[in-house]
Length: 216
Image (cartoon, rainbow, N blue to C red; front, side, top):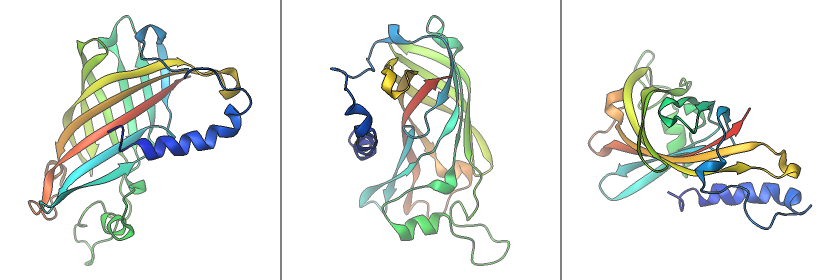
């Protein structure tokens, strides 16, 4: 997952280079240290929150795509992680792939008026995930169950979540408190009415998530 998201991270670093040039700290402000987390309400950082998806392509190779510009909130109490609540919205219409033709196909209108699109169609509603329970499974780890709404269908989904880092940005970058997580899960696209070319194209879709939050 980290390799898959490396290019996006590199772009973010390039964008912040002029700020760091003003006086970079000697070490990253974020630490894999849960004691750095403070309770409260956090907002999704849309520039650094990514949802990567992987699907089997005809049995020959995996294929990857990406969703970004995620929005939402996280309510977090480090003394009671089981009470955490997260609600996010993922703009399906902004799906990114390495192929312009495939991206067009995912968002293409059906050929016949009133017919079902092959995949999302030209104006897909955002997907949403709203947590319903959090079950800590180890230090810095938890199963987060919630309702995923995609393509107009709502199904329960459980995310395997791992704490990544927390801390406070330096003053020249705004001084905000931040926390981040990695998560993954597997869904079946046919469960959400996205069954075009199953089983030629894999039904199972692996989701890998880099979730960044900034305290309000």
